[in-house]
Amino acid sequence: MAETLSSSASIEAVDRGLASAGYIASRQIATAVYLAEKIEKPILVEGPAGVGKTELAKAIAASRGLEMIRMQCYEGLDEAKALYEWKYAKQLLYTQILKDKLGEVLGGADTLAKALDQLHTFGDVFFSKEFVEPRPLLRALEQPKGCVLLIDEIDKSDAEFESLLLEILSDFQVTIPELGTIAAIVPPTVILTSNGERDLGDALKRRCLHLHIGFPEPKLEERIVETRVPGVSATLRKQLVGFVSQVRTLDLKKLPSVSETIDWAKVLVLLGASELGHELVKDTLNVLLKYEGDIEATMPNVSTFVANAGRQGVFG
Image (cartoon, helix red, strand yellow):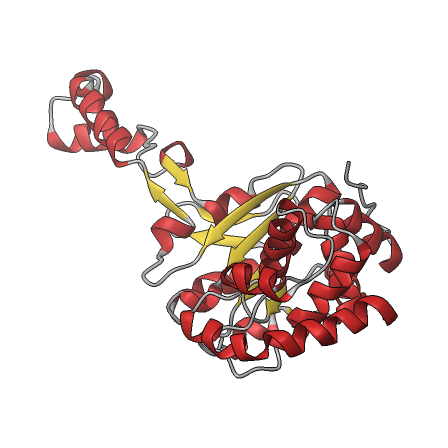
């Protein structure tokens, strides 16, 4: 079970909490999470796909015992999908009921002026909170115990969408014209992720702590594999991480990520492997690499990489 973090947690406690949720963090990551909580700032996590940016948000939520609310960004994402929209069907039903009860509302007014006066005294709820359908951003502000708000792949949204986030990122509140300003009951921990598909605006960056997660050092990646893939031997773990590190030095369309290292380790364990071999690598390279061109580019290096990784497994 994940270790619940206290609000006065140290960097070491954050590290332990993330580890208890299955996330092996570098010192840099644990420090950013610690500081974000202390100064109540969102974290903008950038880096290549598959290095654990989304998993970090999940681990923070698990370690703190909080709900994680995820908003997946995409081109064309707008206010109605991200913040709120009106319950139009319920509003239409309300209009029909009001029409049926109009005589009671007007109270027998015999002139137009009196009828309007009566109508003005009627409590109109047409644009009230009862008719609002909250979307991820508004739901995050309404959580009584707080939450972790993951705004995933913000770089896939339109640049104009960033302006919608600024009020939430700086003040943890939103302004709805018909309702006024709605502030967070408990400020959520906000994690934004970006794969760098486009440059983000300065206004958004100013409101966030910046954290770059790249490919981990071999020793850290070994710890990650050990945590996520029970049953993998120490020798195989060291060899496969050493092999992946060498593959990442090649000029490939997509370098293998941490998540693909984990998938590969799971496959090797499933096949009963205790150490890396040339034929085993050739048969399973498609788990690690996602493009045929990358596999063809890596294949001539397999024997060398396996030999190097083997020496690391024995002497590393």
